[in-house]
Image (cartoon, rainbow, N blue to C red; front, side, top):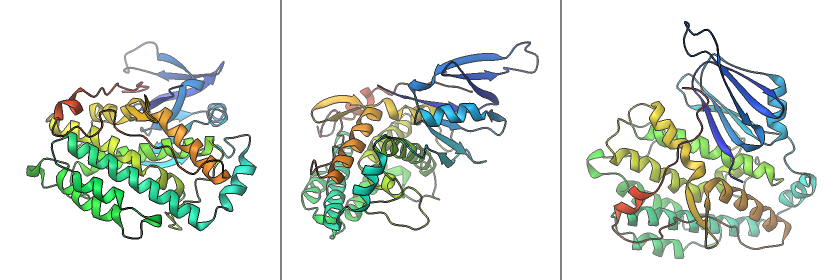
Length: 327
């Protein structure tokens, strides 16, 4: 089932009744009545709270955690800064924790190699359909070895970021750099919350990564597993830049487009499916790798492969808007 991403950017009172998220907000000071909207909690995958006058009740938080919904809080710059997740997202969590904690280093290095292989191939696909030859990226992907000891990921990143956006933008990927870095930062934060939610739902510990190990990072496994998914968010940002929309600020329109990530079409194991569903399958396949029941993680690919120099394919890719809880 496709679970929705809800964004609240205006003052609102959020509560729960009959397993529904109840949203109450007053349109203007002159309005006599608040506007009330209800959404089934079982349909929600992630909620973003981005206004200082949002009030959320404890019973609603309880119900959201019970339904394994990720709740993300944004700071004064409208950037995600914190996330709530349930402590127990799966009935088999203790067993899966045990196998994850005991996973041997060679297995983790193999899983990381698979992850980088898919990431570089997806980056190559996006470059190809946007008009940049990327055969070198595919060659590098084929050379990824256990643990990516040759740092293929880093070599590919240099070429990828130098060629993804129009040359006149003179883009440099830097978290604190010029736009559209702000769009990438926001979108990656949303993607990270989706990934962490899927990992918890599959009974895994998101704080124990297969590669990322920063002691100040609370979600290193999410940072590992989201790597092959990053190019799908990059595609949305590229489309925004090409459309000529002002991307210097995170406008409502731009946030809507970035939040459409969860419902994008991807291909996994030969079948099209929404990205959010693919993420759940990726997390489940990783859990089976830790259990020793399979050897490879399932990752998504672009639905149009690597057909070269056909920007129209990217343009035709549908970006359905998410539900808007607030303005």
